[in-house]
Amino acid sequence: MQTPKHITIFHGPQHPGITGNMSVELDLMGETIQKATTHVGYLHRGFEKLIERRTVIQAFTIVCRICVPEPDPNEANFALAVEELAKMEVPVRAQYIRVLVLELSRLAAQFLWMAGQSGSIGLYAVGQWAIADRDLILDLFEELTGARVYHMYIYPGGVRRDLPEGFLQRVSKLMVYLKKRLKLYDDIFINNASFKNRAIGVGIIDASNALKQGFVGQVLRGCGIKADVRKDAPYLIYDKLEFEIPTQQAGDVYARALVRRAEMDQSIHILHQVIEQMPQGDIMLKMPTHRKFKLPKDDTWVKVESARGEFAYYMAGDGSEKIRRMQVRGPSLVHAYTLLEKLLVGAELSDVALIMNSLGICPPEIER
Image (cartoon, rainbow, N blue to C red; front, side, top):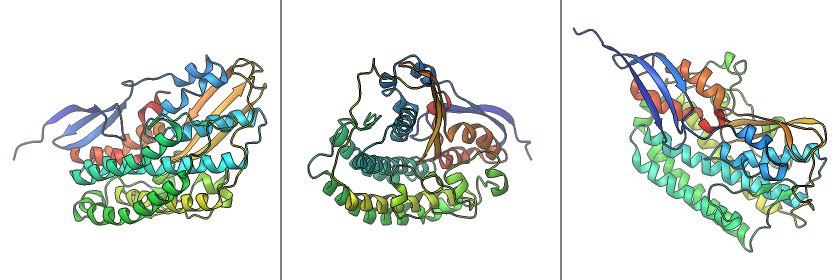
């Protein structure tokens, strides 16, 4: 019997939609991983310092680049931080519209995850379906904001423009379609025997250490920990909405997939409520020009629940028109280093993409 050969290879950098431009250095014995080392540095970087060198309003255009597949939570965090420091009270209608945008963004990100996760095991038809259905959401974003990916819409003080005529009806119609459509995804992907065989028992996370390590999102909920910022520390109008926080107990790739799939139903449920409850009123506070807008000498820490878990911003002002200190804390740093490098040890080479996609890693968020 031939002794397995020890080799070192690089998995990436590549961009399958979720894991982005990063590389994992793998030490292999045969096809079994002995050691994994994450490398970033293949993408744009230095967002925090770029923000600190611009006025508050100019910096607003940078934050959406911190995670391309899901830019809107960055806009929301930035706006919430500025508003808290400046003691702004955002109009109620603007808060509802923000939740509308954030939940549409969450759905779009989950469809992109579905495309990447299914593609990692060769179910390419699912990927084509998911990208096509995601594009229907991007059509709505284009109509609302003028852009499909970088929206620059959730602006300090409110939102940049009001809803177009008939927009809520078009969102409602799309949600009805997607609700039915997701049942087909269950048949071809979630309940697919090939996916179950590849995902069950793979990439298991220990619940007892998950919180200690700073893991968030589906990583926590997939091992039975019910944690969601929208419930634990409600922001905007989430405390006025009814929705569940799905969890699973197994802690493996399949459990995280079940959580994500259930969360898509919850987002649709939230969007229907937002549409029904949408109030009339102003969408924006009157804001000064960017050269005259100054932040007080104070600091704040705000957070939202992104499609990948808790996403937080630290912001400090010094009384000038610029931000003195800006720091971003997202899921990707601990998920790509602390967690991924551990989970890959003992796994097979063919499981690398499967495990990576299940963790919701966004490399520019690491290179911030």
